[in-house]
Figure 1 (spheres, one colour):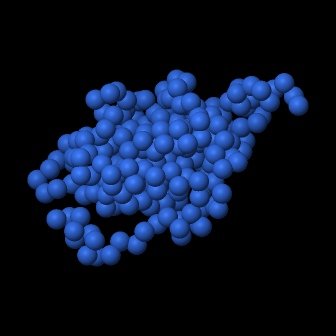
Figure 2: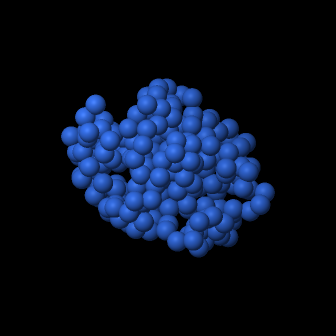
Length: 216
């Protein structure tokens, strides 16, 4: 066995061609830890715990950690630029490691999905999410895999920014933790089954009655 195999793979650029970059979006700082906008960070933390990956190295304006999930080499990423500038970190990472867009997944909160619901998409608009908007602008494409975690639609009379920066209620916490588990499982499905099978198994069809309940 080569001595290089004992070194962290992100120092071996020739070995990163098959690496999957998995980024969860959020805001840095303890004041944002339990807010709705930080669900992407929660999913990364869940994966890191499950697969014993230390996401503590600060590089490319992000906390990163390398490891193996479902037999695949991965780099877990938590951008530290604040949500609206997430694309700065993501672009640096993909460029440095020479990672194609097809090997980049991003996980984030979505107000259009009911609490704990998830959805995998292979491309699309930002849908009003400023973190995704910045990533699209920086990468110059919207064709990247995203896992959206439902945080529920904002109540009438709420400002969107206030809603996503609010903490989950005691009653909502078990539901969002369920959503985090589903999102982590969706990552595993993407790595093992591929995009189409992962979408078929993970994406939930929301009935009109469910949407009405969320809006109210």
